[in-house]
Image (cartoon, rainbow, N blue to C red):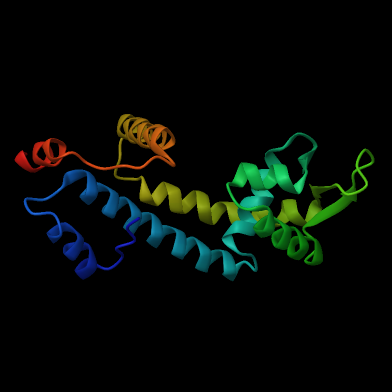
Length: 180
């Protein structure tokens, strides 16, 4: 929808709605900060020799029972396409971070598992990402962090409810937000 990333473009987005539109403003800010965080995490992951997606794939594998998964289950857990996970699996296997096994029950199927080199890479990268999260949330109390999590869960739930449906704001709803 909106990927207004620099301040001039964000201001333009706010100006598109006479009187302001608080939900749009919040989404623009949310998209902007998540984009910047993701961009930084991608850059930092590259310094460790992986893409951010590859790091997440290793983390997801480490959380699985037996540290093993099918690529399609891994794609579903990560919210990415099978094509994206396929190329990730190929590169992670080539780099030696995972092992690939044929599925004994399905000749076309495979499983991937985390190996020692993959576990070591996670341990190497985790301190940076844990530190980043701690720094980003350091000005928030524990209660505020819990509230923030609740708000994000509500946004996610609302998004799940409307995903794929055609949305239009009624004039009354727009005016309600502009009165504040």
